[in-house]
Length: 600
Ligand SMILES: Cc1cc2nc3c(=O)[nH]c(=O)nc-3n(C[C@H](O)[C@H](O)[C@H](O)COP(=O)(O)O)c2cc1C
Image (cartoon, rainbow, N blue to C red; front, side, top):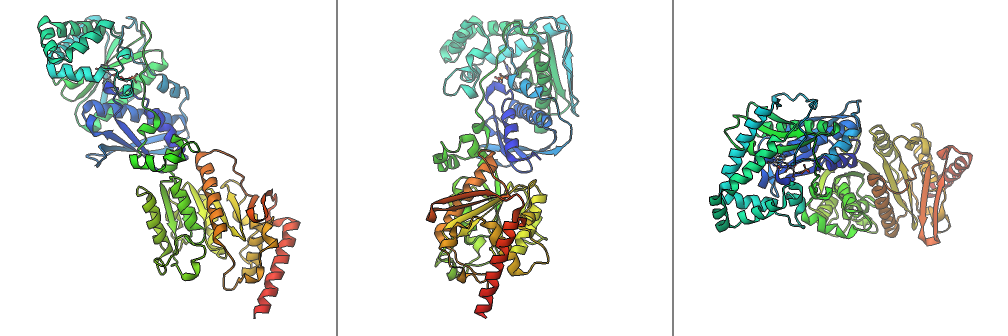
């Protein structure tokens, strides 16, 4: 699949530049971690709508190829319909190691439609890709083009002659500034000015009748015929059978040829009329004019990316106040990102809620523990009503209440080497919020996340401060940073953890270490610091997911301590292995052991 959801969304931007019948752009996309779902607007679910979606799929496939990915399109027959959108295909991507020339991207965005005249001379036709079940036939001889133009003109005449059609037609082309992105802009039709007035008149029932009597539809059809004759060549894409899948393949073929044409300086104009007329073919066909345009070919306006990425009106409203800090497009990227959080207690619960309110749309959360009264002072989900309940399930309910559209995976069990791959499926960022004393689980999770290429954010409270570390899968590992080894005693590992997590130790002056009990795995922790940690996690996750701001990965360490007005950010080149860190670890261990002996 794409390296990340952000890359998939970039591909979707190119998909949306495809041509569509009447410029209605009847598509919608949703980027998942392992595929892109393609939806068709149910209002346009005729054959032309499906062909248009096919063209968008071809764009996706071409742009992914420029990034070195091959695409596998799975058609969804009779897919579910939601919000007037029907799921029609899922596209998966695999790294192919071969990159298509990036000039294809320009051809996609500069693609021109030419409804005007073409130069007659066309020495070379664009190269045609092979798509099983679909073929392309060229008509190049003048008299054959003339016969074809005659056929189109007759169909046009019949259709335009109908009052209802003329009304539809007018609606389709009328230029309304506020809707011009999903209707043909009159200016792009390249018709003479009088055409505008004829269309306007055709939309009035009575005038339409009079114009019919005067033979205007015939005139219009003749005008179109003269245009078709003025083509370099006519291409006819044909497939033996009809059906949604075939229509999509025809659309892919149209777009593949069009992009190739664009690369060769040619312009194209598809013709929907033959497609809709049963006399033309048994199966699905799409005809198009092609050639060197005589005057400037046009590029129609396109819907903005955020209008073709699937998001509900509720989502847009719920997170609209993020705007100004997070752009619309970034918001959509957040919606399609998955964050995994292990631990739903002191910090994990707050992390989840902070991220849910930032509009992150997908979470995988885990905790096997239940809430106890002793968690009340700091754990987000702990209240009288939740004591005795599983932490992950309680927090899942809270997150879903904030945003019911969250795609949530809940593990109310420990994450072990057996289920960790399932836990990490599709995850963009992993947040470590497990118990400070649970080194073993933490080591497994960090190691696996790094192997899977997932960055990890670890943040927690220390006194009134928060400390945090971010691990880059390609940077210094968790074990390297802390100098963790398999043969370490628990208190030795804890000392290493304390020394590495807070090298600046701004809290030292006011925290009473006597309350740390390594054996019982308890220590002091206060809600204000837990909330600080959640805020920090929210910011770092935004930076990681959106690729903005500066991320300081380990061996950078950070501590923010408002109690003593300090923000410390330092670089431990050798992690816990430096002489200074070794001395700190030794001193902490000595203190812990002394305290342990006293309490015995
Ligand atoms: C399936 C299909 C049918 C089309 N039929 C016609 C047509 O009959 N007449 C026409 O002028 N343009 C036709 N077009 C071209 C579109 O109107 C044009 O591509 C659309 O307005 C978008 O503009 P663009 O190509 O500049 O993006 C068709 C396009 C598609 C994909």
